[in-house]
Length: 321
Image (cartoon, rainbow, N blue to C red; front, side):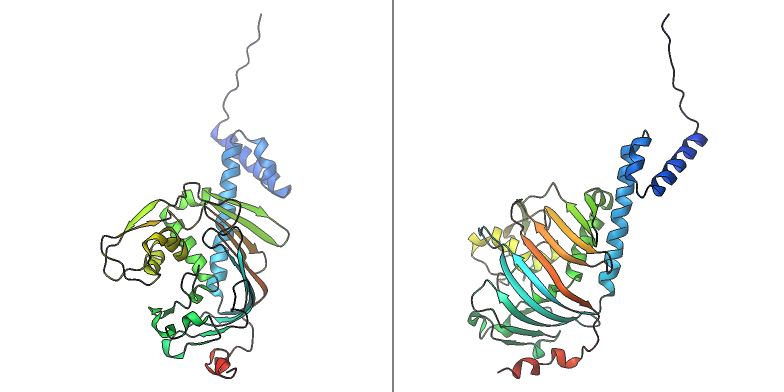
């Protein structure tokens, strides 16, 4: 005679007790990985804990970025242009104040681009105090004509402007995509803990570069459209370079532009464990082999003492003339 065994489901009370015991065992073992094999709902438990971990790290990062009032750093800026097979590298030495007004003093100390090394920029918030020295000769004579909404567009066809230096621009993009679908956003995040930082990877597997944007208002430009859609201005220009339009060229109403569906297919952040600032940022588009952008903050000093109005004075540059 064959024996038949029947497993009775646990009552709600014992099920809750079991989960509590599993959680305590996992905590004592130093992490949630150990809990996964011990529960029938291991996948759900594992994903839920990963999601909470990502939220905690990102919200701490948001708060840390919001709290930055000043910093100094060397910024290694690596960006891909057009069909180039490698990243174009530039090293900037930065002193920046972010509150109450954004101001930055920049010196280019090393660059793959000809004629940039040694160039300096002071960017206070007001047009009449901005000053440029030693930048590309192509900018001579048009520097004061490339402002928009108090934001300097100091170089045509760059990935970013100087108003994006720091962390707030990155955070604004992340908050925007999080607000669109928070649950989907966090499920796309993978966190890997390293010795001194968290590696946070945000995946957008639905990313593509074939969306269409139709100009709706007079005065719209590549820059204003990129800002509104939270996408990269160079990517918009790159996808529409056959139309022969510059960043600030006013577009015609009903004109169509090709735009990416989001900022990036994959974003990797190295979030420092001490400051919770994303001191390394690596961004990929459809090219999985070569990053679209990579930014690394080195010799970073948070809210350093000694910053003064003179740091951003027009004299910092005029004295070098």
